[in-house]
Image 1: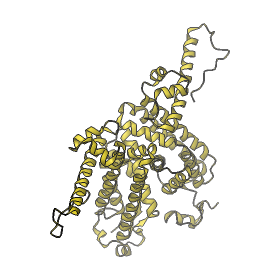
Image 2 (image 1 turned 180 degrees about the vertical axis):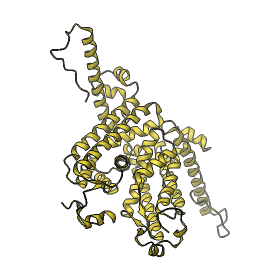
Image 3 (image 1 turned 180 degrees about the horizontal axis):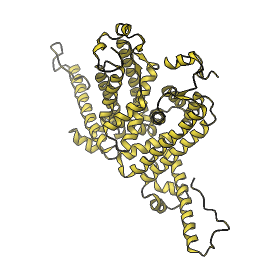
Image 4 (image 1 turned 120 degrees about the horizontal axis):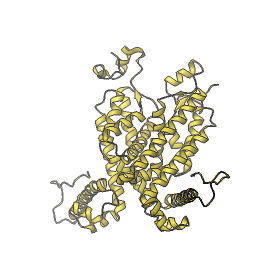
Length: 239
Length: 239
């Protein structure tokens, strides 16, 4: 959500033209945010072609002209709503993963969060649209950069905090996570998979991202050999 | 390509009604195939909404009514063309990878083939469309099954033939390859990446799929592993 404008005692009096400008900016931010919320809900449910500008205006209690004023086209609004939601779900996944104590729990928390909603599928639809609408590419590019930048930072923090060994360089790990999320969700939504099935499929193809510090020779052996060979589901953390 | 009908000496004479029926079937297959070729070219260039049924009919030297006769809707033709092209590129990748002598060359050949064309991006667009058109899901589902089935078979054959160690179970390896291909291509096409950039990104996030036999005792290795690998250019089989 965009931060709301909250007047305080130190604000200039209402008659001040700077105040008026700020209030206008704040109202604009609120309207933008409301339009994005309404658009997101309708686009997710009915897709781009199944949603009209007047549907979105009605959902957001706004006029169609306000949509064209703030976003210019339905396609631009689609891409902006999808980019916003993608960054939201990435942050929600990082938040959920903060509680994890083992690398597997960490990965599972990330995967369960991103497969619980259709935000990644929505974003993938925006990516597909952007291929044909290169005027919308700059926003997508900035979103991808933030996604990878924030993913890298979150993952690096976690492995440092817990002293885990990452199985490959953290940047590639984060990029792989999101590329796989897109691939698994695009395929899964096409054939109508449930969130549970999506989560299982993603965990399966993702595999381990990191291991806990080797606790001895047996742990090291498992690392060098087949990482899936250990019998238990959480075998690596023998603490 | 669908196999062409070739009359032989044992065929019944032209007046036979069975022959007429077969000739009609053959002409039908040829027309279907021509429509798919024309549609594929136009859809890849202009996308679904930028291509009309009459454009495709003109490109295939056919009537618009023939498209609706064979495929019913533009969307169904889009999905069928994309599914066909996806299976083609998968087979082309397997063919290219047959020449590889090391696991890395194998992976590189696969990746270079799938990033050289936009077949995977085209298929991803069909997957996105199918989410909203569940009547088209059965064809997509069959395509995905074949893709994974053939991918698993090709990979299993290669690791057995060369005596490589797969780093994870072959089915997950193949599924991961295609999920990553979709994710990398959807993102890459949105931001206008070149085939070279797509290939580098995909190799980077994919990482190793298999290793040559561990280099612990290289003499035995060459005996147990592929005897032809001794002259290979890649570092994995130390000499």
